[in-house]
Length: 147
Image 1 (spheres, helix red, strand yellow):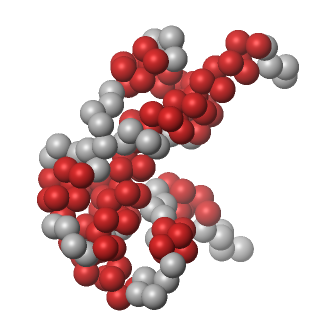
Image 2 (image 1 turned 135 degrees about the vertical axis):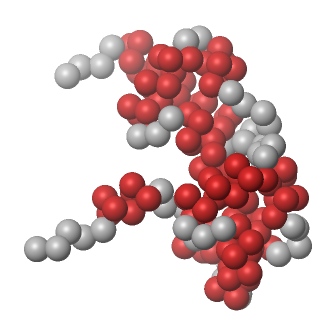
């Protein structure tokens, strides 16, 4: 299978979109239509291309980034769960808590209590790496299969 210049351009656009918009502007209100306009694609085409390239939707990637940042803020321990919710760009504490629990495996309030002890004395870059959220389907895929 050979790639065309358009395929190469689209992959470059998706990488820039992920790095420049989703990773840096995660706290801003972003929607798939606005992201698609930025790379001259329809929302449906962007979603299909993004999922093919990264294994998740643009919205899923955005929410994962928001949860990663929320985890870092919760580890600091100086903000309430609600304050963290709004700081990372979520508008509903209930939806934030549900998504956080789905990705991390524990509610944000419990994560906040546990993480302070678990990462005490650890450099922040190491704490970020060892506490990175793993989606349930990724955890099942990565788990060794019994023989």
